[in-house]
Image 1 (cartoon, rainbow, N blue to C red):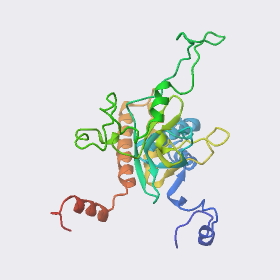
Image 2: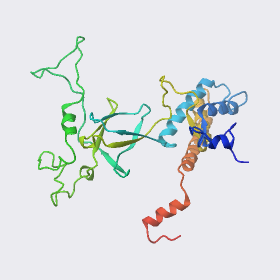
Image 3: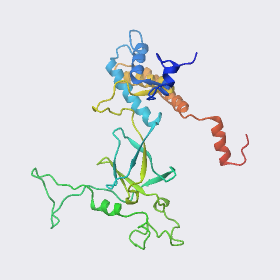
Image 4: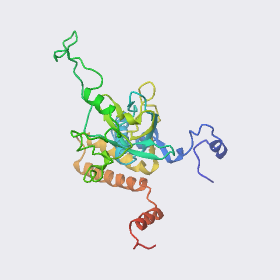
Amino acid sequence: MALSLPGTSDQNYHEETVGSLYGQYQFLTLEDIVKTFVATYVGVGKICENIRTADVHFHATRALQEFSYDVFRSILSREITVPNTLQMALPRDYVNYVKVTVSSGNGVEKLLHPIDITSNPKKALQDENNNDLYDQNGELLYGSDSTTWDKFKSATTNTQDNDSTDDSEYFPKITAAGKRYGSNSKYLQGNGWFYIDQDKGKINFSSDLTNDTVILKYISDGMGADDSGGIPSGSAIVHKFAEEAMYKHIAYGCLSAMKETSPVLIQRLKKERFAETRKAKLRLSNIKLQELTQALREGSKWIKH
């Protein structure tokens, strides 16, 4: 008998119009992890004898966040058309970016490079005599974009192809023979650039990307909020490959926070947590023998199967 989601027949699964069930058998919800942990580890005579369910929830959430960074590496994506403002708000569940690309006419994703030779600092407003301006509470007034960023975003990878002496270190004349030697390759490509403004929570793009389709690929911590601002109940999921590692993380977190826990027990749980996390990483790395062999063949003509 084929394995299936509990209470779901093969027909219901394959005729699902929305597709919300597809591929879900490989995951467990965070609530399932908590309930199983409480049933297995918590109670009289068990390793976590006096642990509250609220503590289990907290450490389960923390374990999921940590796993999202290093173990799961679940990459989310968002596609937009760059508006005239040349800005894109970071997704609500954004933690860090993986890469940013621009889609070509054939749908091929071309890499965009982060720019590190400019920024968008807070612009203090000043009067005609360059004196700072304050609000009624005596606080400094600030503008939106800085003059530095306004200047940079108005330039394109094409307008950098000039005889400017000030910027020649970063933007050598692309069409001039011999002037590209020793230059940083990311300043010579024609795909465009982006700059992530952490303070304002936005990605800024170079002006030559206006109306182009860009794709942001990023990682989250698995704790994305719903429309009400809270974490959807039961929506956080854990891959089954990492189930045992989650239990070890929760046990270590709960017991290491209790002052009467034996140091020997804490050390044992720490080792078990490390071992199970490493096992989960290996399983989730999804390395296949055939793919590894092909990669080795591409790297060396001497390797034979």
